[in-house]
Structures are given as C-alpha cells and as structure tokens.
Image (cartoon, rainbow, N blue to C red):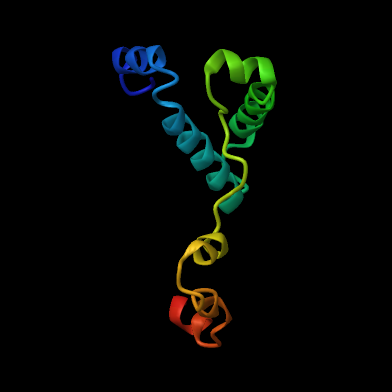
Length: 101
C-alpha cells in the first residue's frame, strides 16, 4: 500500500486470495529482525502485537487465513525436506566455514 494506494486497495479486497502473500510479507519482517536486531525497533513491536491479535480464532475466521506461518523456515529445515538423505551432511562438513567466508 505504501507504494501504490490503488494497488493496495485491490490487494486488500482479495484478502483470501492473497493470504500466502501476506504470510510471506510478515515472514520477511520476522526474518529481517532476526538477522538484524538493531533494525525496526518500534515497527517490529507493532507488527508482533498485530500478529498476536491475528492469531485469535475470530480474526482467522474473519480474514479467511492465518496471517503468520507457524515456523521459521531455516536452511536446516530446507535440507531436511530434500529427498536426498545426505543433504544435512552439508552442514556437518568441516570445510563449510571456509567455503562461506
């Protein structure tokens, strides 16, 4: 909505259709705060209050979707979800630290 009010209004009118978009936006805010604790000092608190209120069963029924994803999707969870059983061995590799630095 901050970019284009008209586009925001259209998006708001289709809440149920865009539930996954809202979840992704809120998850992006959560991840930003985790990786950069000094950022969004006041905004993040307001976001958390809003998401706590949105977890109410009445709010979920009214919106038609849950505003937040249940768990933060980490690299480890992504590796576990792969079909390859050796995917988690990447994290245990002794050369990983040298590779990412």
